Image (tube, rainbow, N blue to C red; front, side, top):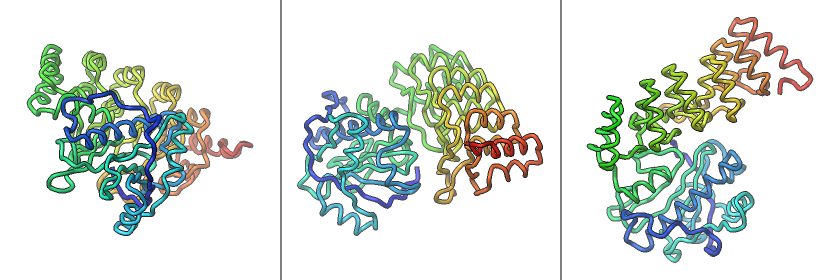
Length: 396
């Protein structure tokens, strides 16, 4: 995830009353330092609130304050820290109260943003950031557990994110919880697990898992390290079913932030794709090129899959940030309608228009949908766009 951030939210001390507590004892790998233990617990609670808010609203809190490359921070040490950070980074400091108010409006009055246990130390802070598409929360620690990012020789920064970068020590909430319970993933166990999946050996998978292999490891953007992704890429429906039943994350990120459903579509494994959708796979998660499973299905012209995804809350209008190496700030992917037009898929164009897609939205390069349709040389697509845009509702 590209982190180009320019706004700050400053938090003064707040009561913990009403803020739900994480279960006592997060695991044997929780920091022994009491302050850091509380920071880990607080971060998991904040991340849970942020994710719950997103599940209810479809966006992250304070989105009206954000643009593609903006962020907000939660600073728990007072205005002095905020001013210092703003001076050092050029980021704007904002008050925290609107963020807490927005969370409480959707999640209930019990939500309270926590206070860092060393609030008198102006080098300590909690922070929250978002580029509008993903989020992260973090804290500066007094110690350096293996899942923290090194800041100085003896202490680090712990960050939870929706889009992990394990090579930079940014993990999802679920991945952090796994580390707290089981410790770091051992390469030999992970290799044995992937080897058993590739060989279609259920017993080998069970042995690797019993030895401590993680069924949902954190992959770098260059890795396809999740067992479910390997099975999906091979089109092995039986193995896919077994791994789902064993707890594999159906929305886990792999190389290029491809989720299993997108990998299934790339391999033309339609039966596997349908199984993942039936299991609850999210059809709107973009990879680093901004391509979601729904956009890919629209491009590929699979009418049955597009219909199925529409019934699963596919976003028919959105396009997404491109975060791949070399992308320019603000670059976005094609919208579903644009993808279908450029791929010359008239049946999908017709289906999307009937589903209510907004034909007045611009494509990724600023072209209108009608211009894109005319440029294809496909008379059927051009006519579909013309008819949609001349309707009384103007194609919306």
